[in-house]
Length: 134
Image: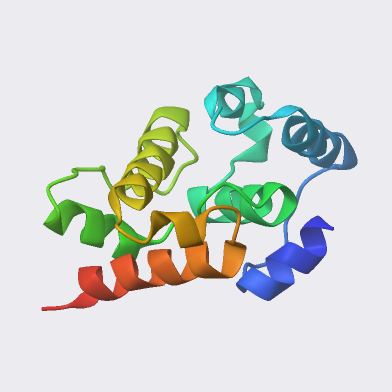
């Protein structure tokens, strides 16, 4: 499963031992939205980058947003300052997904986005496009 997500997301090959992969899979099964603190329970060997773990969480749970630097910049333009990060920091990633959920709650068309993954992705794509604007 993780290999398919890595391939789809364009991530390189993981160099984990089988016990590290098992540790990550157990965390992915145990985590419940909007919890991100379980990321701290992972050993240093996992060395998870935020793009990889957010992809795993998104495709396995369908509730977490994929970390994207353009989306983060879009949030920043709206006054929501989320620090840039390469590591899967539970507090930074938690603030990121919470900010996106807050904006979705404030959107006038929110009722159409509830439990609709394609529209949620479209909303995040719009934030990313806004972040890319000069």
